[in-house]
Image 1 (cartoon, rainbow, N blue to C red):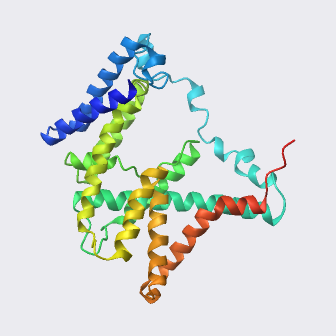
Image 2: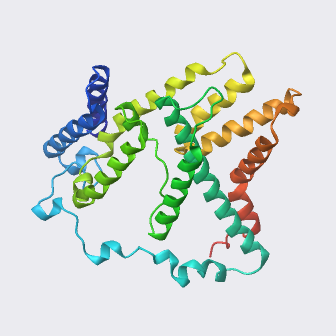
Image 3: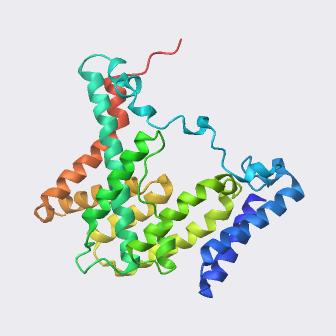
Length: 303
């Protein structure tokens, strides 16, 4: 039933987007959620395939509103407590542990930065803000806000706040100015009151929207020079690796590394900008980080 819900939702989304209905993506999520709830009621939670707690209405009225119990805010500023902030430096000894910590921090930084860059350029391209050289005016401010968000998310004890590809949904509906982000931010604050309602929406209701958003992002591929392997294969590697690994960073990493490699083996290493060398080497370290950690600090033998 979960797969059937996705298929139904995809056709609903395609129909609404093709007919240029305002708010098509949000409407499709709501309609698909209704379909999921009906199917869940017909066949039951176990047979439906939906995650527990989704595609089902709360049994009590209070289940529709956020519970402001202090327990729900227990993680705020928890990472800044001494035992968490400095505890990682007391669990190991010597240069090996410092290297492991450095690799973890490096991997997180690289992942967060290139996730943001990939998303910002993709969304900016869809919005028509990217110039002929592929540059996005005002990107410094974008990265500054994203960095502050990541720091705030870490201090709150939640996963890193970063720029999400779902922003393309707002662009597709006509959002172009900073006022759009202000309105979305205010609505998110209001939505906190109804956070349990968002938990009703199953992943199968949002997946069709992401498929359509992926299509909107893929339209920029028409601008590739498909006759040059040095460009097309790294682009293809990026397009394939992103969905297979579920991370934008890994896809971008595959593109950078293969681009530099092809330039080297074709005798055009001089065409590679010094910054590309630095980024490509950084991504090689990023890929090798788990192996390096295993060499530096191998896991204990099984008992």
